[in-house]
Length: 132
Image 1 (cartoon, rainbow, N blue to C red):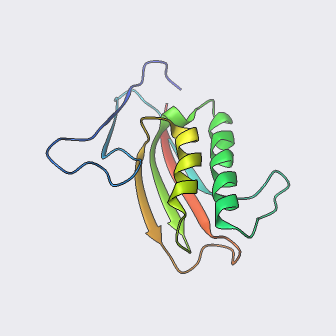
Image 2: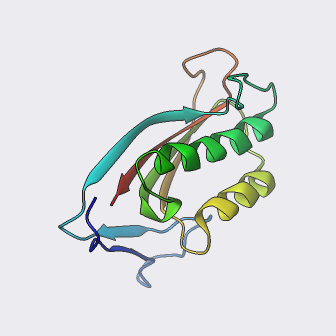
């Protein structure tokens, strides 16, 4: 991991502002190393998957912080997040844990609703790219 990488997040004034808590553009300096993480799911510390999407979302974001830390990264290093959900996301709850994780300058984001994820009990999965 280099010490001089830069992540810049912007929202151009030539298009509408984001409809959620994300940045339209995330720019990474040339000297950064890239990290690609597998989809993170909402297991608790014991590996249990709660039945509720909100609980899964909370655990998923906690797990993201932990997997980043395993590589000496923080949420500020995250460049892009893809969110896959099998049911409607409670955005009030989600943006609460999202904001607590990513703060005032969140990464770029894509959201998709899908029929199913890798296990039948999963309701949400997030995969992310980071630079450091």
